[in-house]
Length: 143
Ligand code: DQA
Image 1 (cartoon, rainbow, N blue to C red):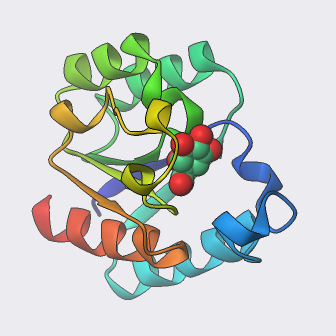
Image 2 (tube, protein in one colour):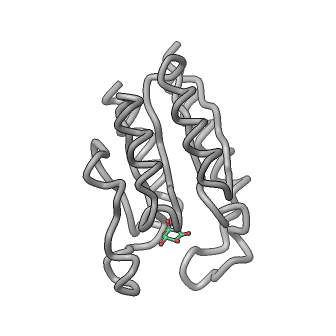
């Protein structure tokens, strides 16, 4: 069975309470449940983590390279700052799909640059929770 690592970056544990006008009312638990149900239907195994710590995310990606076939990641605020996460993704050699709930290109200028997008297979953004589900389905097709 193919295995995918799903990574939620900082502050995504607060979904449902955090800026609902931008991120909606959906909770991370609800998103994860739906991701699991998509994976089950497609007969793929998912490991899901959320971390507020850049180094922890780097470690998870590094360990994933021998155990997983792909990475679905919402790097959250690290999207715009983390050379370390980008380098870890490249080093892992794993196909990566980057997702965002919001359309980062319609927001503040500092969000309009992703350090991750150039090393991702593709990016899905702006569709709220649907970005995750489309991202997972696409990644499953790729691997
Ligand atoms: C986000 C967009 C980022 O700019 C922000 O820091 C987040 C969430 C999104 O999913 O829209 O935490 O990645």
